[in-house]
Image: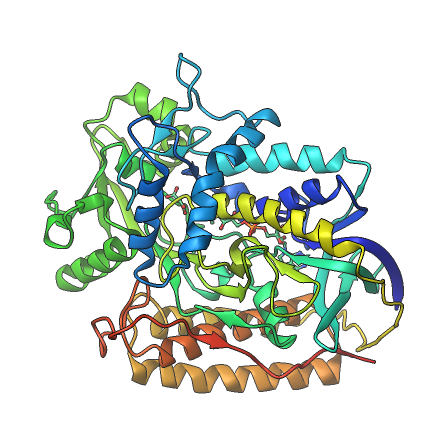
Length: 524
Ligand code: FAD
Ligand code: SIN
């Protein structure tokens, strides 16, 4: 196996990995690996924006309160305060790196409003905020002499001895052989796992690899049952899911049924701008009653110039779908969107494994609790990347680089069409049995099937060798196991976890933490 060495190793090139790498490059040599090309990430597709208090009439305490309300009793208040207090500074830093946020003529940020927010506080770049942030950070990272980027480099497993992380095993496409990267410190910033579900807003790379790796390494994982479903994605049979940003509802779009009647007033006083879990369940309920395939967003009374200015990509996509936005309502359905739980970290981004940090969507910092407030994810990635980088600086001098080489299972380069069929089956299974509304009976049936899939995949990999497709499927299965096990243990409904057999809150909110035995695809 090839060997490499670096001081700081970052897995992932979304907002969290890139921002952390940039901050660490001020004092260390950094290697950043990413499984695809450097820009491909959930971050790239983020639409709405980044939450930060800039309006004079707003206050950081309001942002904290809205986040705690959305989190439904399970947020860590200190983590929430950390992101809310540091939001302005994070946005100003991006601004200084030339991220082109929309501004008013006065030069102040144009602020959108989204679900669950009591004020307009979403800083944005039209309806393609993620692309603007991602491309700017990528160009900064690519021109930084202290950062080495390895594209098409797939992280397989952490190297962990005595609960201490000393690097990763990866498959680098260019070399066509496994690679062991030794590092003093590893940052896991591998993003989410939307691909667990049949309908999801995430790109194909979001296969939960970081959750699988952390689980196999025995890291503490929590809140995995809290999968956030976004209420409004364009309903178009057979097409790639396309998000219709919540900011459109913040701008006045109303949810209606096929008859053009509003229905959200039956579910929440904030109506179409209620927190996402409430809107998603309301839609599922309405569809179950009506038997219709979708509900609608009505923006027929919007000024066309306003839509084209604030939401140019959504306008284009709707036109491409054959909609005349002056006459037609936009058909929408919910889809899996965001993992609220993940690798448990402290306020410095440290996981339960020494020298292993986690940041961004793969982490569970305590910010989101049982349900994430809109536009808090990019913000969490920025703020925790910065605090983790500051902590890394203090740690680096105390950690030696391990030189221990490991043995690795062989690579299997044969195509296996069966893996695709199994992935589709898994996505349908999870959508049906561990989706927006869950029951104990269905979750138990699902768990049995997942365990069987996990066993079969482990033995297939041991026998035939490792391939990226097999590992991605295994990571999807292991992420699903964490979701379903958490959902079964949580015999209540809270935040975005809803059990129709336990429809109300339990008496006191509790976090569910899961660990696994260490199972690696390499040995010493
Ligand atoms: P990502 O941006 O997903 O990056 C993860 C990186 O890890 C990728 O580069 C990936 O290739 C790499 N990676 C994964 N596995 C491996 C592996 N095995 N080996 C090597 N590399 C690996 N949030 C907001 O706050 N505001 C919004 O407006 C917003 N809109 C959204 C719209 C859409 C359509 C989607 C999908 C999400 C949106 N979100 C939004 C959520 C937010 O975009 C994500 O939670 C956030 O971008 C996650 O950032 P990240 O850096 O943690 O992960
Ligand atoms: C959206 O733009 O609706 C998504 C925002 C988010 O996920 O925070």
